[in-house]
Image (cartoon, rainbow over all chains, first blue to last red; front, side):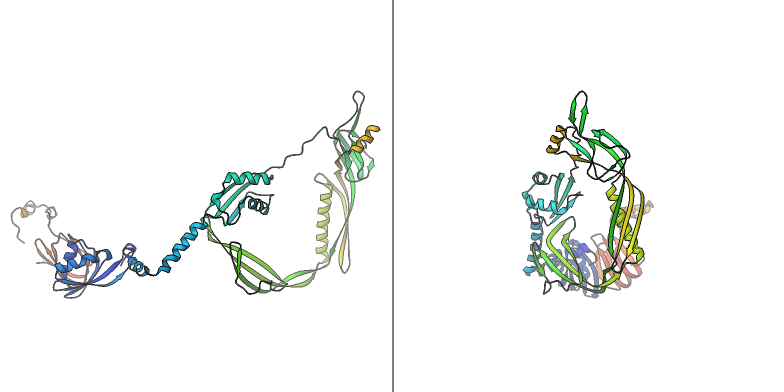
Length: 402
Length: 87
């Protein structure tokens, strides 16, 4: 047997005995029987290979040539198939496996979500579950349109969603809705108040009446631009105050950092245990399910069985890896503590003065003790201290009374 | 071999013998002998293969001769070929 097609078709080894074995070959050729690897054993014997399908016709050629043809051996796929015919389990198992694959492809065993940025996968998965799309769902029961309508009505943060099912994998593509910008309502009664106390450098009242001017000091919460406008022609009216108030502000921020802290020292001991998850059931391949000790990190990985992009089985192999560690005491050096505290306080200051603010001058003092480092940041800044505040009805009545 | 009548016509006209239908053609290539237009196999042994043809017998002598292929018109013999004789 020299090539794969011959192996698939099957072949048999024939031994022909007779006075004229060459005539046997002639008869085979006349009958159109294909043969190969023909070897003369002795003067009256030949050995050759034929196709299994021709084995029935070989006797006729042997009779014609006064030879005796004997089938010595058979090989190839038909022989193995014949052997397997009575071993039902070997047929049933692949059939069952195939049937399971076909059936499982009608159910969703894996959900992939793409395109979400602010809305978490868990939120989307929960809503999908409420809509009937979850692990083990029979996907011919739902359509992309129906799922989209249900999910979008429950999750207003999304503006579009599509569900594509590939085998047992549901591919969900989402687009998040853009946030509606705040509309400036001229009719609403808003005042501008100071978000931070300081020395006013500039007041630009775009709408409303400026209460303070350059050089005056204000404390937090004081009204900087009032919504009340007095006109000689229209009288008193209230509008949505708007403006920019630049002021110099002073901050004193304090932060403390413990000098000593604990770090994990991995001793190198690792243990791994396995579990099989079929649907929602879990089969543990270990005796006790308790966590092995407290001082260890637990890393869990779940691998879905199946062929990617083709089908996914409802079976996952869960690997839990425990990595032992010991807590050891460590301490910050003065330089490290200074850097950490400086970064922390500076970030807090920048957050306090906002995007348009600037730091004019700053001074950092750090005191070290055996337990902690305490830092104090004193800074002089320039920032916009204008902050909108809705005037309450009571406040409005008071203003009208005035 | 003496030819009679119309069979000798291509030779008289000095035309190639291949033009005659049924004329055996023997091709020896390395350790392989191909005989076209044969008329049957007479002897098949590992040291001698005799093939019938219209003009007579073709004998291949050698060692470890094997019938590589055989159809109604062609025979291919492989092995260590010593000589090819026409009898």
